[in-house]
Length: 96
Length: 112
View 1 (cartoon, each protein chain N blue to C red):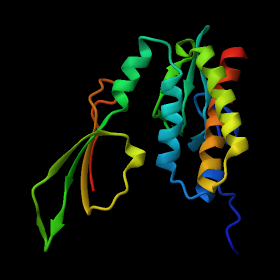
View 2 (tube, each protein chain N blue to C red):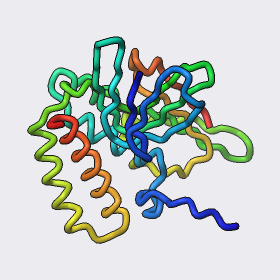
View 3 (cartoon, rainbow over the protein chains, first blue to last red):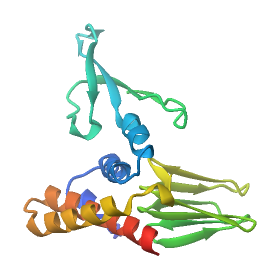
């Protein structure tokens, strides 16, 4: 029996959940009153370090300055990224 | 008790609730502690209700409703409604629709 689960409109348009969630979060952040807005915009920055691998060995990592996450195309094999300091998020570190 | 804006509708959670994972849509989460009521706007996320009556609400942004600026919300809603009308590609339509959904939810949170 084929699955008949309805697909959300953003997924059928080719967007992933994480892009959707980040777009929603950006919209909310831009609608805040000051001083909360400047605090939130500081939280939006994501710092990336990109390490290209060739022949099983990592090359020198290159630092990409703070960028908007949903504009990156993930073309490198290993990307380390850390969410900008925020006492609430407690610093989340992901390595893929 | 909390009321969370699940994609399937407003969901009330009391101690003893069946373990559930619910995807949230942009909307208001109401927290009732005794007679105190606090409202937070969540941008999207998930609510996990565990068997031991602990509930976790995970959201990228969760702000008290009075931190929202209603002028910015109205402007944004008008802007994205217009974008939705003029969008051509699927992706543009999706982004415009997301904007309309989020701004409308913030609007109802502020006026409701």
